[in-house]
Image 1 (cartoon, helix red, strand yellow):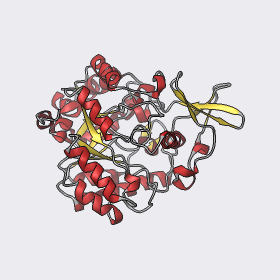
Image 2 (cartoon, rainbow, N blue to C red; image 1 turned 180 degrees about the vertical axis):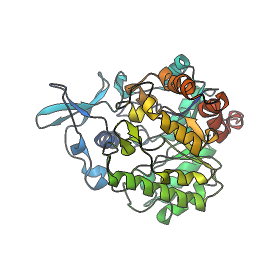
Image 3 (cartoon, rainbow, N blue to C red; image 1 turned 90 degrees about the horizontal axis):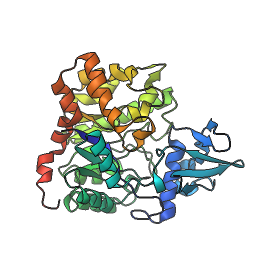
Image 4 (cartoon, rainbow, N blue to C red; image 1 turned 120 degrees about the vertical axis):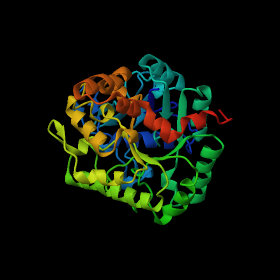
Length: 383
């Protein structure tokens, strides 16, 4: 069975479900456009540039620069004005009409690429409604599972609300995992493993589902396109926080999404990982996603021979039984097809390295099936 452990379905911007209103949704979209490494494009001459000036001040969504940021529904992209010019950025892949990616669209892509099952992720800019996530899996109960969305930035000010929402998502909506994004750091610059976060973790870790962490470079956010000491040290500090968290909750299964922030550690045509990145994996309950194209597809071309040594490092240091294939669909379509996201591993890498097929089988589906206890999940009545 081939399982994609990282896919999305999301509604078009302007639908306020899960947000206070449509303007809050738009603010989250502007924030992610500002932070993402994809270049901005000046429409008048298609020259490339930066969108850093779209970023909120002091990490507050209420202090976004006014750039007439808006959605071009017909072309399926964002637009904004700056210094008398109109700009866009292809954070979203092209050809998403209305910037919407329905569960039907995802399953159609899965059918074409031969993907049996996909785990839906959540992201604050792509939707915050666990009811929507449930509606997706209800439409395709044999093809889709979903994580629960957590309003991490509200934990400090309103932990009870976040706890109640998370418990409802797991126990009533039958979602299969919890997604936690410490990268947001919107309301608090303190470490997320303890302090005001403790009450949330004391409940979330007892819900019996794995927790997936999308680690960034810390509260002093540096774009992952900037390969510098601050970014690498920020990420390594996030790993230290994760180690502390796992020591406090030693029996909870968890995983790091996307793999490592590959761009931070890139040196020329190679990625050089410090030895300390393997320290968290001394805990046997920690897993990691194998997801290269969406983060490196603009610097390394298919079949990504430059990162084969890094996959081998992951297999040697973590083991195929704790690695799981993921794509970030539909966002990886910026750089490769769904089929290519499989072939670089199953065909090109396997043929070149001679890795045994049982290891590939674990990586491409066996590991995530075990982590999510998929057979047990499919027997739950609400699906």
